View (cartoon, rainbow, N blue to C red):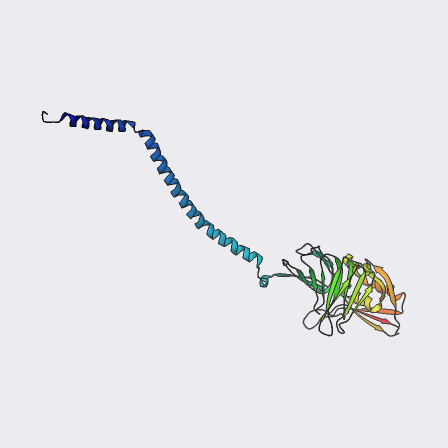
Length: 310
């Protein structure tokens, strides 16, 4: 100890004292809190990045699924259209509703074919025979009635009657309410478009491919849907044709006198014999009935009514 320099000892003691003061000045709790905050912040950042990766991983399949479903919805294959067919047997009238809530009355011996779900840009139906249409208005989706001979009637919302029996030479369109456009083939191979207003009738000849527009009594033309037979200045030939369909019989008419008669009458619940008896009161008519006969295939022929005019 004698050899130790007192001044050197003093400096060492002073340095040690300063170190002790610095150590005492450190706030241990505050440093601990700062360290904990840094650890938590690091964990939050790590968790956030992990969640973002998981979200991206989950969102991608959902996005792809949505795109696929959207494509299928807006690009539905037309080949997948499914159709329904309604037929009114001879002697009956059927009323039914289409997928768009339009209402149809189908006359005896007629068939209507239509898709179970209408397309988004149009509503197409195919008619053989006669039908009355009460079409729901929709200007974005025109309603088309197509017939076997290429004539089509298109509307947006209206009430009209189309008669297009295959065994008739004439296709008839009658408008009750609204507006219709009739598109028909011509002899030149082109299409003609004719517009009808309420109370008008268009008669299209299948053979000559010519059309005639007339004013008519609409009630006469559409009375059948209410179970009535209404005739206004109607020939016997046309009367018998309508009676055949209404009563599901075959009427064989022979005009031996060569005279032409026109009739005005309305029948509601009368039987066929009652109507024939009424007709004989204004013309020299005689009629008789031939009962159905069994054929070789075990089916029966229609009842036949033989009418002669002298």
